[in-house]
Length: 573
Image 1: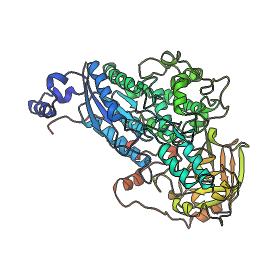
Image 2 (image 1 turned 180 degrees about the vertical axis):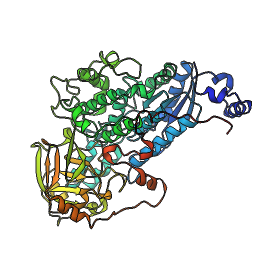
Image 3 (image 1 turned 60 degrees about the horizontal axis):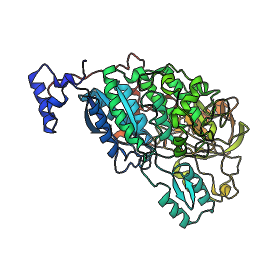
Image 4 (image 1 turned 135 degrees about the vertical axis):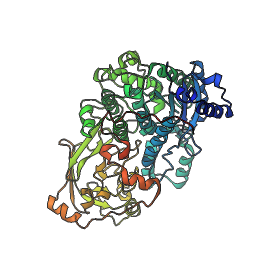
C-alpha cells in the first residue's frame, strides 16, 4: 500500500528524510513506530470558550486508542474553533476560516487520514468543507449533545426553551429572580444543544453523507457510548485509508439529495441549506436553491423534536436515534449511496429499530405532513429566500401586511419594544444589512416579537431578513434574502408602510411596488457597513451570497475536475 506520508518519511533525499524523522523524534515519535503505517491526523477543536466541543479533550484519547488498535499511528493537532455563543457578530465567516485551517493543515502535513472532532454549529460544516477540498480519507466524531436542564420541576432545553422563556420574560410572566435562576440551570453539561438545532442537524447530515459512523451522531455527550464511538472511529479511519475511501466517493450528488430529504424528515435547521451548498460546492457539485424544495417535496416530518416538536435529543436517542429515522426513510432515499462503513445505506441502516412511536414516526403516519424548506422568490428576493415549514405558524399559506423596516440590528434592538411602535399581529418585520457581506450573516433573523404584542399573547408573526436564525429557533421567519441589502438588493428599497405579500402556495415573496419604483429608490442607496482589515475584510471582499452557500469565491471550484486536490512539493523545510 502506498501511503501519502511516505513522501515525507521515505523521501529519496537523505537530507529531507533526516529532517522529517529528526523532527518526529523530538516529540518522542520513534521512526520504527510510525514509518510505513497509516498516519492519522486527529483534528481537535475544543477550547475553554467552546462548551459544545469540550468533551473532545477526553474523547481524543479513545480515538488514538482505536487508531493504534487498528495498526495506524495517531497524531493530534488543533485548529481554530467556532463557539457560536461568543463569536461576534457571527460565527459564519469563521466557518470558512476554519475550513481553510483544516484543508491547509491536511495539505501541508504528512498524514494519510483525518479524524475531525466536531460539534458546535459551524465546526461540523467547516471540517466537511476542508475534508472535501483535501479529499483524503476522513471521518468525523461528534462530542454529543448536552443534557436537558431542569427549571422549577420542568425539563428545559438550551436553545428552543430559552427563546420561549425569553418571550415569557419580556411579556412579564417571569420575574428577574426566575430569569437568574434559569441562567444557572438551563445549560448544565458540556455538549451541543439538546434539540434539533444546527449542531444536531449537521451531525445527522454528516452521518448520512458517509462522513460519520452509523449510529454515532445522536449519542449524548454524557453517555459512555461516546467513548465507544471514539474508539470505533479511530479503528475505522485506518481501514478507510487502506480502502482509499475518500470524501469524494462518499459525498456524491445522490448523497446530497439524500441529505436534503433527511433534513426535511428531521425538521432540521435552516442553516443546513447554506452548509450543504458550501460543502457540495467544494466538490464541484452545484445545488440550486430550488433543489431543497424539490427534493424535500412529499417528505413528511418524522421526528417530534424541538424546535418543530416537543421532545429533546435525549428522547431521540432513547427512541432509536438517527439510525431509526434513516431506516424508516429508506424507501425515499437512494439506498445505494455508501455509509462510512463502505457498505450501502440499505445494508447499513435497514435493521435499525425505533422504540418510541411518539418521537420517531413513520412515512405512513408522520408527525407532520408538511416539512422541508420552502423556497421563495419574487421582486423582494430575486435570488431566493427560505422558510422552515415545520416551524412556521403561517397556516393559511398566504399573508399580506405592512412592513416595519429596521436598517440594522442596533436600530431594531432600540425600538422593537417601544410603546410608540405602530405594530400589530399582521405587520411584517423587516431587518436588513445583516447579510454575508453586511455583517457576516449573524443569527438575527428570528426577530423578537414586540413586547406590546407579547403582552397580548402573540407568539409568532411574519419576519423577513437577509440574516440567518438559530437552528433552535422557531416561527414564521423568512431568511437568507438574496441579494442582500449591503449589495443593493431589492430589500434595501423597502420602506415602512410598504405592503408585503408572502404566498407559500406559489413560492413568492414580493413588495407591492412597481419595478421602476424599486429602481428609483435604489438610486439613493449606499452601503451602510464596511470592514477595514483582517479576515472580515477578506471575507466581505470574497464571500458568495446565501443561495450559493456563503463560501469564499476563491475556494469554490467551477467543476469536479477543478476540485481535484493538489499535493504539495515535499522537500527540505
